[in-house]
Length: 101
Image (cartoon, rainbow, N blue to C red; front, side, top):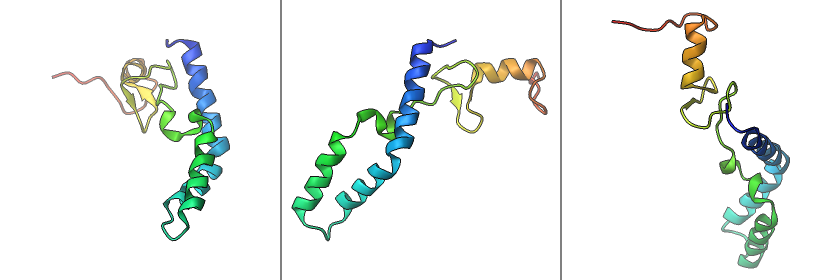
């Protein structure tokens, strides 16, 4: 099990991303618009810089829903490889069996 503080920090980041998602997108659209004046785009860049760093989507870490493990997480399932194997061995996931040859 991962440290609960790390899990909580990641959850806080997810909330911040959701909160500032529209604002960040609007500012990025202004910044990328080459038809606007340079001063206007620069002002939007400064506003974007003043937003919390943890509100950026890239700062959110993919973690296992079961154990909180940050490494070896399958994106589609949102479960780590270890948790997936444990669940498959105990028969909690239908259609998956441990392979042997």
